[in-house]
Image (cartoon, rainbow, N blue to C red):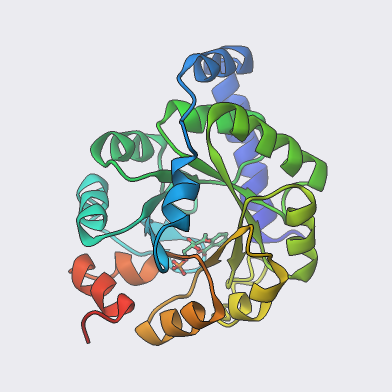
Length: 263
Ligand SMILES: O=C(O)c1ccccc1NCC(=O)[C@H](O)[C@H](O)COP(=O)(O)O
């Protein structure tokens, strides 16, 4: 059965082929490799610092929720996240289901000084070089979409550019695969990307499968300070939060509430 995840991935392949017609892989690769590699993997560094790190997401829409933010002043939102104490920013660039754009990522990376991840459905090395040119510090690699060998290869490309790879898993098998492929950051998605069900305890349940030498990020469906409390107790390094923040008028107040600084 074709899942929405695979439909999105097929569309990403079409996007890449279109992009290659405008600028071939050889050119994108040459430009990206000519740039100074980011030193010290800033995305990983930000995640490793302090207590729980917050990766705050700029997401206008999603397949499961439809339109989330009709008004989407993405640069202002990103600046607000930075002022509110976000460690990193996640920027959706997938245009069809998330109404994202490469332009959003480029403008956001120019406007903030914290590391940004290109949140997209990486199906071709081309997208990693593009991410570097757009100013990203990290890309997303989804275990449900890529063979283990490709994940290993893409982590190698990321390394050559100074980018971090957030390797996303949903279950035990995918975590084992991410570890074998050499992931230094594993994101456990609480959302099942095949049927959209969300169980915020999924990352808590799977936490012990990832050794302390690998950073652990809990993703999706995080809504309350109680959720953060559970994840803190489980020992996660970071949380990735989209919808809860996107629907909040006052993002700093919401972040403070999630951190337990404000009730
Ligand atoms: O969010 C979706 O509907 C979705 C569907 C298919 C693939 C990916 C999807 N979301 C990407 C994400 O992982 C989330 O944007 C991210 O983890 C934040 O989740 P949330 O806090 O629940 O907005």
